[in-house]
Length: 277
Image (cartoon, rainbow, N blue to C red; front, side, top):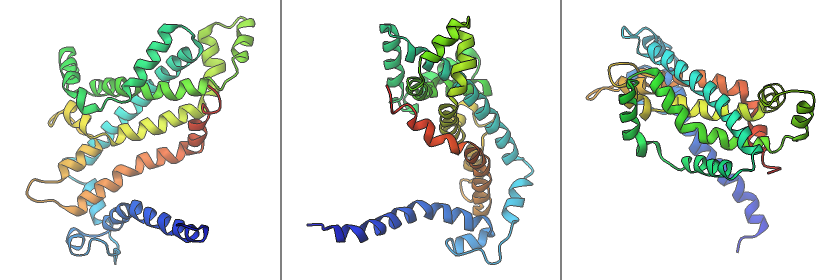
């Protein structure tokens, strides 16, 4: 039988073990970024002594500009997708949270069901639709797929958060002559800042790290993203591990800066809709 004294030392050990498991891949990436390729295969977990920026310089100066093209495409796809997703999800979430009609409840249920569909399951029909619209192998096609797939998550977050906002604020604005559209943008949307930060962070990280959709939709010859660029840096019969680790490190920096910029609203946005609804 486990006693309180036993649990007092067991918990720190379990926490330390779980922390080590999660940070071991990060440690391996960071230490190998500052080594040469031959040193990585010989000593993959040792510290970089002396450290070198040769691998990073090699990636940044590649003749095919693989990293730079991937970075531009990833920034474009992620920025467009999360901007459209935030606006559409906020407006739809506000409408569904304030409406009491059966149609609105049915729509919310259908959207929540969309959260349970794995992307590979619908990838084949999605590519057929994009091909029929002439959007296959294009950035707008990839953005359209991201918006369609992730909008249920955005609506789920905004619907819960809107229910925590007193409806009296919107009623007071209506008495002053404000229409519903103007009330949403001038009264409601500024109050949704924590929820917007949560949606931006979650969906920004998911879309930035997405590998399958850019690989299939953009195709092998018409573009790449940073994640697909890492895959293409690994050859079939040989690979430069120094370049691979440098690509992984450089691909992480932009989304890490983005996360740190919005993280102070992150937890507040997730729990804001949990107190009422």
